[in-house]
Amino acid sequence: MQFPKFLLGDNTDYPTSIFVVHTEYPRFIINLENDEVEWLEDFTSEDEKELSSETENLIEAATAFYDREIARYED
Figure 1: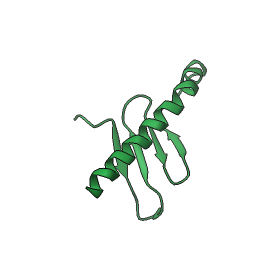
Figure 2: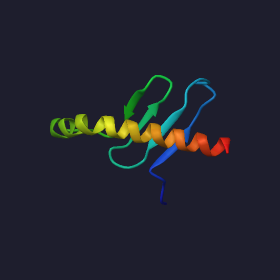
Figure 3: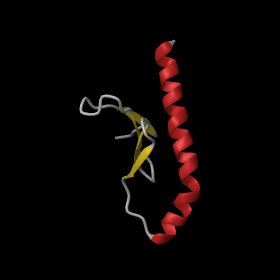
Protein backbone atom coordinates (compact mmCIF):
# COMPACT_ATOMS: atom_id res chain seq x y z
CA MET A 1 0.00 0.00 0.00
CA GLN A 2 1.27 3.46 -0.90
CA PHE A 3 0.91 6.26 1.67
CA PRO A 4 1.24 10.00 1.13
CA LYS A 5 4.36 11.59 2.61
CA PHE A 6 2.29 13.36 5.30
CA LEU A 7 -0.97 12.49 7.04
CA LEU A 8 -3.10 14.58 9.40
CA GLY A 9 -4.30 12.98 12.61
CA ASP A 10 -6.40 13.85 15.62
CA ASN A 11 -7.70 12.01 18.64
CA THR A 12 -10.54 12.82 21.04
CA ASP A 13 -8.26 11.98 23.98
CA TYR A 14 -6.16 15.01 22.91
CA PRO A 15 -8.84 17.52 21.89
CA THR A 16 -6.49 20.48 21.34
CA SER A 17 -3.75 18.56 19.52
CA ILE A 18 -3.29 18.19 15.80
CA PHE A 19 -0.78 15.60 14.64
CA VAL A 20 1.13 15.39 11.38
CA VAL A 21 2.57 11.96 10.57
CA HIS A 22 5.61 11.78 8.29
CA THR A 23 5.48 8.36 6.63
CA GLU A 24 8.88 8.31 4.90
CA TYR A 25 12.28 7.80 6.48
CA PRO A 26 12.83 9.16 9.04
CA ARG A 27 9.26 8.53 10.18
CA PHE A 28 7.90 10.76 12.93
CA ILE A 29 4.77 12.30 14.42
CA ILE A 30 4.70 15.97 15.36
CA ASN A 31 2.12 17.46 17.67
CA LEU A 32 1.53 20.95 16.24
CA GLU A 33 0.04 22.16 19.51
CA ASN A 34 3.45 22.10 21.22
CA ASP A 35 5.89 21.04 18.45
CA GLU A 36 6.72 17.79 20.26
CA VAL A 37 8.24 15.23 17.90
CA GLU A 38 8.11 11.47 18.38
CA TRP A 39 10.51 9.57 16.13
CA LEU A 40 9.33 6.18 14.89
CA GLU A 41 12.85 5.02 14.02
CA ASP A 42 15.83 3.75 15.97
CA PHE A 43 18.90 5.83 15.18
CA THR A 44 22.62 5.21 15.47
CA SER A 45 24.87 8.01 16.70
CA GLU A 46 25.87 8.72 13.10
CA ASP A 47 22.20 8.92 12.08
CA GLU A 48 21.58 11.41 14.88
CA LYS A 49 24.26 13.77 13.55
CA GLU A 50 22.65 13.82 10.11
CA LEU A 51 19.18 13.99 11.60
CA SER A 52 19.93 17.06 13.69
CA SER A 53 20.70 19.06 10.55
CA GLU A 54 17.61 17.75 8.73
CA THR A 55 15.11 18.03 11.59
CA GLU A 56 14.33 21.71 11.05
CA ASN A 57 13.60 21.12 7.36
CA LEU A 58 11.33 18.16 8.13
CA ILE A 59 9.35 20.11 10.73
CA GLU A 60 8.97 23.07 8.36
CA ALA A 61 7.70 20.70 5.65
CA ALA A 62 5.20 19.13 8.07
CA THR A 63 3.93 22.56 9.11
CA ALA A 64 3.67 23.70 5.48
CA PHE A 65 1.67 20.54 4.69
CA TYR A 66 -0.74 21.33 7.54
CA ASP A 67 -1.14 24.95 6.41
CA ARG A 68 -1.82 23.80 2.83
CA GLU A 69 -4.42 21.26 3.95
CA ILE A 70 -6.24 23.78 6.18
CA ALA A 71 -6.29 26.32 3.34
CA ARG A 72 -7.91 23.71 1.11
CA TYR A 73 -10.65 23.06 3.69
CA GLU A 74 -11.36 26.78 3.93
CA ASP A 75 -11.81 27.12 0.16
